[in-house]
Length: 180
Image 1 (cartoon, rainbow, N blue to C red):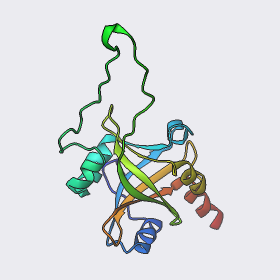
Image 2: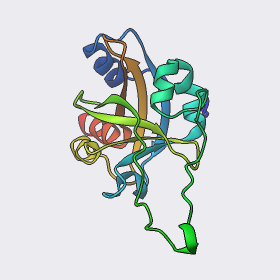
Image 3: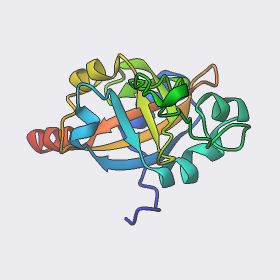
């Protein structure tokens, strides 16, 4: 399978989507979890730019795109600028981070356990992240660790809200080996 070919819909993704009365589930991406995806101070899963623009944005409403800071709405793509110097040439205090906001989404693991996270566009790269204070707990409960392979699928629940289901392919592969 090449990177543009959609894999067969796995049973775990169909089951989780079905529990939320989804009509369909679609493939977003597969990735190897990096150290920055599991770092305690970053609280986010990085989603590549091409996966966002090719597979997710076409399924999002303009309102959702705006909430998630994606292009095609006024102000998108504008990097926030903070002057380095105050009047008189003095350096001002550095801002630590920024509140990116985002579109609230439900993110489920392959067992159907979920948490609320925010989907937002990352300023510098144009990529996106799933982030939030519940992210670390989601990783722990999902047993997602650095080096694991995950697949991410999307669906709309019975209220037409955008949702994601993340399958830890590494763990699922180990479980299938133990069963056979």
